[in-house]
Image 1 (cartoon, rainbow, N blue to C red):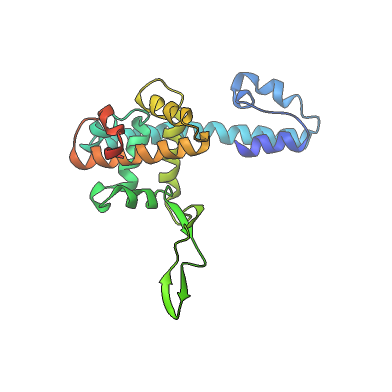
Image 2: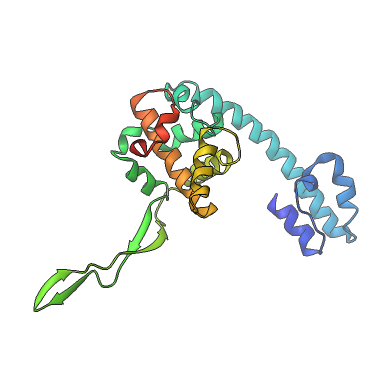
Length: 216
């Protein structure tokens, strides 16, 4: 898909949106390419896309069929914004929630942990080494993580922020308190990860009460 758009853009043909991939519009899009060789490349890319689309649907069916064999599926599916595909991927990537003793371990594994750094953590005072009282500086999120898992929780947070429900209300409350949208989405992603671990570990139904600070 990226190759198709890159080809059109290389010839200064705007191709925003999804219409460029739709079969019924392909003749129109191919007609915009004047060079025969380049147009043939686009046709081959479309053939590859069609073949992969069929394979994708087949793999999707097999993934969902396999995920239904796991008891965790019914618990994870009750969490808003965790659909069947995300739930199946969570089961495949995490396998067991008991590998994480706390939510912070899951945050770190998912790339949602805050990374802090200070070059002056200790200093000498009257010949004695003492810990500095300066606050640690936040250097962003940890970079050593499972990227697929991070994409799942980020995607769930983005969807939850716009779909009516308890997560959207939680997100709106953060914005109302003056938090930046990017930080509010990060906080929501961390909340979803924490709730996922809680629900999966204890085998309990999702409850909006889990959004309270003590369940974070």
